[in-house]
Length: 482
Image (cartoon, rainbow, N blue to C red):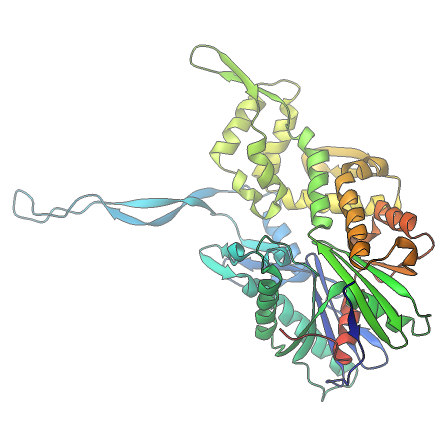
């Protein structure tokens, strides 16, 4: 059994700041020793999308405004791709000619393999947290400039810092320092590097430093969620608790026992599994069949008609990653689609739909519709996937949805048993289960927990519990330094 005691040491700050920079959304909170105050990050919300938009003048917008800018500048826009120019090459030597005059040296442009979208007004970045554990993804191209991941995160953190300062002022805490924070992290970051957790935390630390959070501690996100619950329920009896934090990018679990005001962490576990993975599964299951997957392709050959399966797999990965799906608007992708549409059979409408999706850059719009469908199915037995721009109207039942994500649910259940095994416990030894994170709202996830821990599962602030717990952790000096 892996155990870590968390006795409450002396506090370092008069007020604690906690920041939950998430894959999909971010939240922040402060704790004054008595009450948790959530920081308002958007005009009408304490939760802010983890989104950064950069335009061609390299002006940066964050949060919901970043998404709005991206949609406004791209919806209905025809993408215009051209090969990137790497430089110029000399095609003659420039030697003297017949009349003793220098020959004019001829040059030609050298083109690379990457493509530039000439009409693109800006780039939107979401889910950057998922890349932090991969050393091969340390930079992303923004037009003609390479941006480090920390440069894409820092503007979000600066916005959080400014909003936190505003809350300090409203609470008349003008003399309190705001250059410190407890930073949340998953049990395990996504990635294949053996040192991915260390690498990701170093990048986060650097970004927080640029955002002027100079004094930093780190704390696991599922333990923070549990700490938030313990604060809200100070008179709860001594108990063994399981915290389930199922978010956009990762599934994070911990088991802890409470002894008075102290607690011990028995075990933690985390895997790369979250709402983003589920969205991609829904895209494949619902939309691939009505975009042309599995259809045949007839076309004229040199001496006879050729019939093969349409090469849909060449489109699949780019379709599933909306941030780069604009790359599909190249002739090598669109020309086969035009030929297939011109064939004029019943399946042609599917390829017309795919063609329109590509030419009008509707990929982000489609994923937003899928997220809305997923949310509706959390409250209803059926819901409509309605995308009028692509003439899509599909009725989806909750039963279908659960069949689609069966593999996700199996991984979720396995992770619970892996954690119990690490703690050397049985399900009946758990006295309380705290469920938090956006993906924890999925009914099938609720049912798994309710079946395994009957009568013991509660929902706890799905989108803000981690930030609240981090603020408490900093106030009580529980976080760790790098």
